[in-house]
Length: 229
Image (cartoon, rainbow, N blue to C red; front, side, top):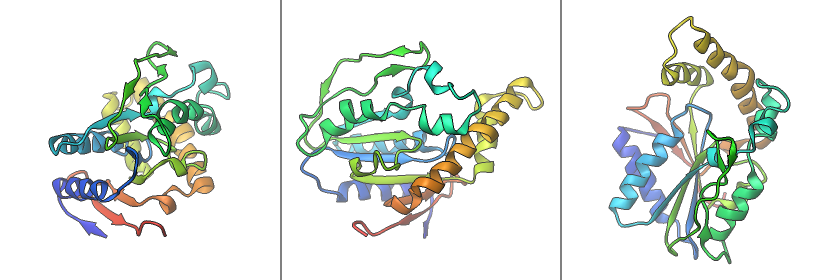
């Protein structure tokens, strides 16, 4: 297990991305529980990669949601609903992952849904460069339906209890308020149990090329697993 500063982690991950050679754009998954820091990590990687001259496509799972009625058809706090009903994985493959993969035409769209408006989204298609890097962050990215569509798999690991605290801080809800109570219930009844279901059925850390232990943002540690194992 390696450890160091945040900058050292970013350099290590950028080097890992640069070491993977594919005949098509590189598809990088940045997976992890909610509030683990995966979006921030992907954004940090994008800055450095662009500074080094790589074309970067940034996208995330929140732009591939199903409508709210479908996401919560089992109930607002259902863990099974979170895992099975929330994300349009078929659309993700159709408009983004497969066009960037072997034999793809590199014509992609980075979103199919507007979460705030709860309506479909139709951003214009773009053509990715042959050596572009897709940095895609989100939950449940290493499940069986998606596992083979990634060229590099990063999993951001944080103890579940720490994610509850981060969610409260991020939400800005005062302690003891109704908003804070709702955040805690969402995590304990929906998000954490859905991650436990994910770990039990898909074993994401077993399939990751790199596991980043991000409970200390300033002093992360990481494990690099042999590729092709």
